[in-house]
Length: 328
Figure 1 (cartoon, rainbow, N blue to C red):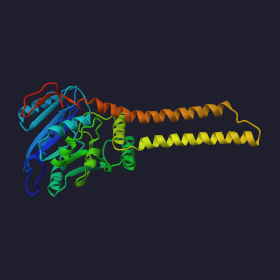
Figure 2 (figure 1 turned 90 degrees about the vertical axis):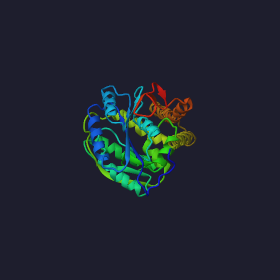
Figure 3 (figure 1 turned 180 degrees about the horizontal axis):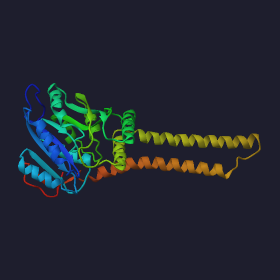
């Protein structure tokens, strides 16, 4: 493993990590575009494809690509573990002095990689893409993405670049930091921001998917956003505490109002509706706060079990032979 890189010379190796899940319609196009972009570069390259439990012909196509090109490496999971863990698996095995993360759907243009490399040679440790346009995405997705990035920067302990994704180049020093971060609920772009170092934002227009369907429906988007918020902020817990104090203060005011009526007007406050609303409000507050605390406790429980992040069924193109059911 390389400790640091002397940017005065050419790098010895560039690793390109491509997570794949049911991408049979586009993976060959992606590979061809990557080869076209990487061919003129004055460096050696390895392409690491991570098959995240695909149920279509993705793995079959990747095996064919590996047989025809010894620069191709293939990792195949025993099941679907999720995009962030697929990226993590690629990071764990990457040997490059610089590592590029790019999705297989061609929404992020491989043609930006040479410019990333130029910035890296200037001394930047991370060069990340910032989306100035997002073609082919619904107004709802654009709005929620915009709100999410701005919200997480308000509540997070770490500043995460607005409108950025996982499309980026990282120096070996940054990769080494990520390899030593063992948490289960992973939010790669936040982890890279947390690591620090010199970072450069590279604006680009994001294209539509070249083929296939989005692997991030609304449910996965919400869970991914939850990972980002909880992994980098204690604000939800503080909000829960604030809501508890607010409910207690309202109860004290209610008691004071009741005593005032009794002492100065001789009447008791009455009404089933008021009682029902009060009980419902306090019950809702209690359950909401318990849910927030429970989410953090559940994540602690997952960390304590120490299960592997992912399980590798096959490894192709590496120096070691194919491994079955390997836990990493």
